[in-house]
Image (cartoon, rainbow over all chains, first blue to last red; front, top):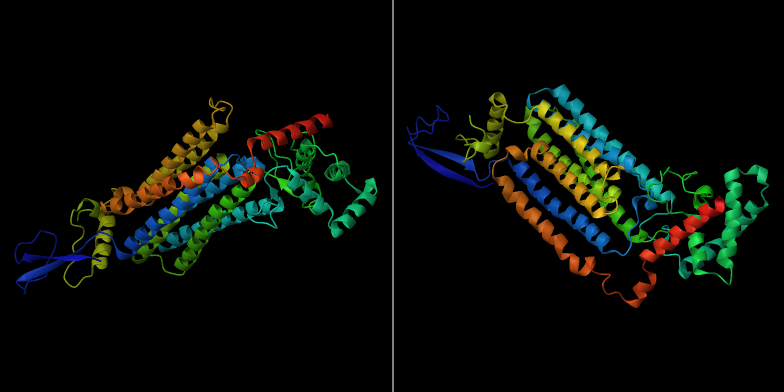
Amino acid sequence: MNASAISVPHGHDHGHHDGHGHHGHVTLQYQPGLPLSKGKLIMWLFLSTEIMFFAALLGSYVVLRFGAAVWPKPHHVHLSEPIGAFNTFVLICSSVTIVLALEAARVNKVGLAKTWMLLTLLLGTLFLGIKAYEYQAKFSHGIYPWKPRGLIYERPDLYYGSAVRARLGEPAMIDRLKELDDTPADQLSTDQVAARTRLQQVRKMVASPDQQAFDLAVVADQIMPLPAEGAAHAEGGGDGHGGHGGGLNDVFPWLRLPIVIPGGNMWASTYFLMTGFHAIHVLVGLIVFAILLSYRLDAKRAGMIENAGLYWHFVDLVWIFLFPLLYLF
Amino acid sequence: MSHPAHDPHGPVTRPGETADEALEHSAAHDHGDDHGHGGVGKYLLVFLALCGLTTMSFLTYSPAWPWRDQPQVGWAFMMAVSCTKAMLVVLFFMHVLWEANWKYVLTIPAAMMAIFLAIMLIPDIGMRNRMVSQERALHMARASDVKLLEKAAEAAVDAAH
């Protein structure tokens, strides 16, 4: 750190201490270039690079999204606002607990500081747990950021139709479908019986030589309907969507038929990139908290806790912008 | 002892003391006789404000929201709420409100660069769909596709009834 020396003639003191310098004629006093400790300065420099890192991600998301012809609604990609809002709440709580840990450590309340720190760690873990659950919901619907696992097609066109046909024509699939057709109706639930009839119609429509453009939209709607706006969306399908009992992919998860989400591929890329990098930052924060918990959290460690807290608040800050941009827009 | 934020020269070291030690020293002093900032009550107040603001984002979903057919109004509202929340976190939880002027040196250039970065993406990325190749036009989703899918969903509902 930059230190400048001020020479003060003996006897002419600024009035802040002292009892020193009785022997020398000149007392040198040093002051840092910036009135903050090295650790904090480095943390703030790091955070300013982080601002630009996340600004690049968020900025490209906004620009990609508003430049796109079509962008999926949150319900189309199985995002649940209440879960996102709850996660926001969890992160805000963890920001408070880390601040309280710092306050406790400053006044040497070691036990209290440890308790708040542990609570922060638990809240951060809860956040990651909920995030993992949300990722699982996307994966189970075939929403991945890449092929071949990703099942997303942009539009119900001929390419989509042939992808459905190809999937239905796989040898293992043919056996499985035959098995389903041969199963007596009393061994299936009413939902499954209805879905089996719909699946047979879909198979006929996809293979039909005089197929209409609209038929493929019907096929896509049967396989995974896009929930209407305003319809209460129950996670995992059920009777939530309009007239039919969930998409075929929901009733028979082994089908894994291609689905249509207009704009879904770009959505998946940006969603997983942004929330993924955010989750990595949360994970790093949790490791830091775990390390801090092994120390005696007294006033001497207040600087360390403050720096960890600064980082954690920044992670919270990023989520404050991610939540409305992803879940509510 | 005065607070660092109000002391134009920052804490002064004594002979034989490093700059960091001096800061620790002054920080310890601050909390000895200065309760001008922080305080559990203030943090809890900020926490309540943050929770309230998060709930406010959902106002755009309520039936009473008058601009339902203009999503841009809702977006602007939600971004205003987010910026308020961000300001609260930065000012109180990150203690920026009580920091000396170095805070501007570190945050303002970074924020400006961040804004420039986003603006610079607009010509190539934001306007990518103004002129597209035939290849892309063939495969990219359009609003008409969403209409088609909605029509199919309506047909399915009608068939079920």
